[in-house]
Length: 278
Image (tube, rainbow, N blue to C red):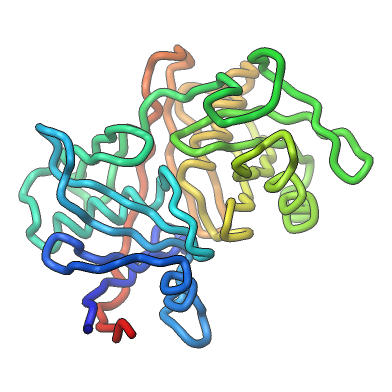
């Protein structure tokens, strides 16, 4: 079977995107891992799939698989690429696109300059919703890794995030500490780990160790998580530029727990291809 796909990226966070509206495909962990291999496959951080919505008054269903084959609830950079894909492919002519995900409904907006603005929904700080083992919700938590205590913020942006403050983003122990926090016993479903250096009240530098994918060039939900954690700590403004290794995103949040987080940034199509499924 031949499968048509598009290779895309959002700030270097790269994706294989498949139109599942007119292709019937079974997605297994082994298959996704094979496609994700950067030497023997296509190579990507996540696989994105466009499917028929299962709820009324929704335009599409959006599924995300990590490079290790695990299916996850949300991906911010992927959401922008999803919107550009369905718009550029003529699957919709709407510039306001409602999308069903495993973590709920999100709304994607195609801006006149081609950038994509995403309503990521409100942040959720309740430990049970990450999930995270803690007695009660708090702005900060201590977590022990390799005999050392780390001060983190924890939030769900449709997927779980731990955010650590660092003084030098370039020297942050992303691989060593990120991998250990990702699989820490207090995060029973694992967690994405953000290492954030605050430059000023409107600028944060960030590196993210993604659950199931290791460090990536960019993470949209990670950018949202870093911003809302620092805003909850009353350290940043309502709109913040998040600088990731792959480029910048603009993240806005009022600070009111029920208000949505807004993410704006680019999405780029790289090439089209066909892969043999078998």
